[in-house]
Image (cartoon, rainbow, N blue to C red):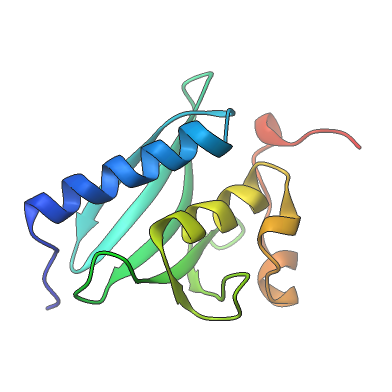
Length: 130
């Protein structure tokens, strides 16, 4: 079974993601990260207190590069995906931006594969009208 990163790395990841959320995603009050079997599960807490699953990061042994899987609400699960760089791995901030871009209505920040985009839907509380 894959191991979780050391506690110090877990703490650093939480700090980085919360800093990024504060800088770029005002819809989020904070980011929650839990660790299981080598994965970091990232949930956003909206300003109204609602929890929103965003993505799963795969620990690859280094702090600055993580595998990316997007949460798919239609499947209530995660699917590996690519970031705007075209790579399936990136910084935690890139991963957060991609997931938030999709779920918080700024899809240009995450050009997802069409299959993932069509099978993903944001909760009605975070959708905005055009």
